[in-house]
Image (cartoon, rainbow over all chains, first blue to last red; front, side, top):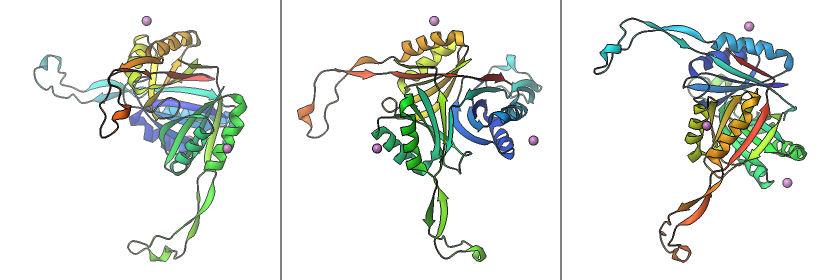
Length: 109
Length: 109
Length: 109
Ligand code: NI
Ligand code: NI
Ligand code: NI
């Protein structure tokens, strides 16, 4: 048994949890914030047999991997027109930080 | 030292925490949701000496074990009378998923 | 790689997280309550290389260590004047409970 702790962006959380549960992983979502990635993170815990750890990691990678996204420009409020960029820009979104922890005992009551 | 992580149903949480603290266990409650059990779960962390792990597990089992409960029927809203069952039914409630994790160092400052 | 889990008082959390991030530690804050210390606790997770564990522990100790604080007396509401103390009193604040957990695998996607 292993416990996987993954910190992912809020926007990736629902898709990730759906994909994990579709593949019969059991997931618990912890409310979290800040730090490991940019703001708006969620921490999820997955308890799984050792033989399925690599599959879980693959799903996390597929659902949350850091990637570029085109973002439409927001027109500036007030006098900040100097830094205004009038076309979509690529920003990096997503990303996951993942720990696999050893488990001494696992019980279901 | 071990860290016990238990995911239990919200309805069992207060009784469980009271029983653990009555037995001098130190408990931290994490806000959680979904996944390991049906909706409405709470995750609790317990830090304890190795010799008391089995006692903690026994308390978790006694407070949260899966069991049947009689539920009074809810009368159907709208036209779903076909599936209406006019007598109490047994439903399964409770249940706990528990991980015991090894701890390398423990400090109190 | 190690995972440090620290339970600290709410009032110490912001200063602690600032100090940890100033020192390039990556911190995730989990919403928590009660138990290990008096009410109003926060649990934080820190993932770090083994060689920096002692530095993280030092920062946690410096930011959250249990200490005495002078508190101005609150004048009693209603008839409880017998127990009213008309000068500042020392109360114990702060304190941290810290676990260092082994990590089998660490990934960033
Ligand atoms: Ni698949
Ligand atoms: Ni007892
Ligand atoms: Ni410094």
